[in-house]
Image (cartoon, rainbow, N blue to C red; front, side):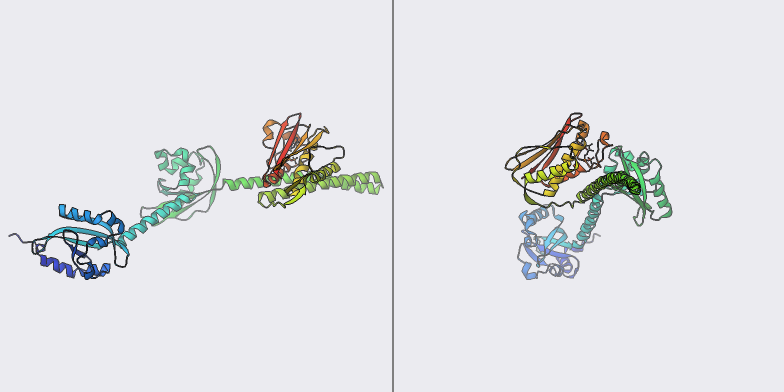
Length: 478
Ligand code: ADP
């Protein structure tokens, strides 16, 4: 005997309508006008029965969905196929928008007329959890991507389960799929002593975070780099034992450390010369006093004075260089007469080198705004070098040209000159030409000149011919 399905009866719907707590039900006519609405619906969406019946169910849709005629399409589908299921947003009376799963079916009422039964489930919470899970995972991915350290998750067979962007760029030449998959194979050529692998294995064995260690790696690009790395066991990943390997690039730090050591070595070496000289002068002075040799004593005093000056200059340059490096060389701007400033610089140099008479060319009786003391420093450095590297050739010419906007100073000597190859390096920190090593200096003067001129928004440059002489220029806005 065939049992008549109970839901053919409209009374059944009535019961379902009134009793169900979870399913929000709407009964619509063929145009989408609400005929009836159940209690669960009014409870969830905040509308009263009166507010909905007789209205088009489109009022529950978002403006955007209404604009896209989503409600009409839904009705059309149900009328055509007898059924329609979809997930979409619906708007509650209090204007909050909820994500729902809805199913509409074509049914006949007791009079046999077609109407649409729409059953809606609020899946907002589920959607929220899905979204937050998605957001959390993309948040994790974003964190991973933004970390400069290399981050890798490995399984016990050293397969790379996860890697971040930093990893990809460090091993950019090794990204054939096969190599990327196994860390042991990948790292072997770059870590010949297997330090990394050893530590990863230990972490798998002990399930304890490893101490930080440094490793030197030759990257696929052939660069030697230094890394600090650390392995941590990953628990509760749900996919067996894994290890997180974090590799931190400390190459730049190592370089700074090395540079600092070089500077300390260099400085102590350079300071030793005038100091040794001073000690010698002191001993001779002692003897001369005992022997009452006034002439020798005077000579020694002069030598001591010169050595103290040398030491002073070196210390001042070193001090300035550290201030420049830390970005604290501040200019003290004032408006001054350029010609007077140039004269003062020349007098300072000529007092130290009385054998030299510096020739000046060009008009200089005009005002300039800048740090007078620092510009004197640049001019004396140019002149001092012109004399120091002159090979005894006494022609040193200082020329000034200017217009309304800027002033250019050049210092020309006929000394030993600089090779074309080295000319581009003379403004670098501690740069000295090999052939000038026996002449006193620490290679900071021109570096400081460059910093001073650039701080004035000016330019500095040099021309030179080996064996013939050099011309050093600077130009600053007036
Ligand atoms: P320092 O004179 O103390 O070594 P500088 O920074 O003033 O430092 O100069 C850097 C280097 O540039 C010098 O050691 C020298 O090799 C070269 N140099 C600078 N000026 C001249 C010049 N006028 N003629 C030849 N070489 C020069």
